[in-house]
Length: 141
Image (cartoon, rainbow, N blue to C red; front, side, top):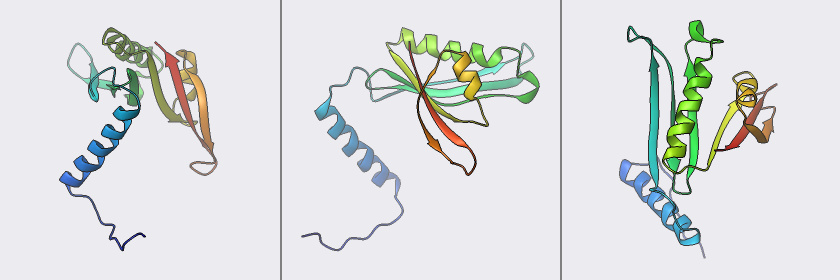
């Protein structure tokens, strides 16, 4: 029998408890190959120190590189900087033991960019947002 519960916004300690519980469950099913999360966040700058873009990601405990965001300032797009940033995080991740990279994007963002850089679509959500697609990609490193 399920007792009555309340559902409310999380405090920081609640977030930790939820993540700790999920990590414990996961690691009881499949052993970790790496620490729970190794952040790999990089910024690209001009020689003058101007921030032109960057990438936010990390390696999870099954040696997967998760790319959460990659962005290049508009005036620097189409010049190969995005591919250089992507190759950089892939290489660092590979050196740290990552075997696969994964990410998602929208059809109005960088679908062609990731295809050009060797990523394979592995799934999509159609009509999200309305009239568009969210595409999930992976690439063996």
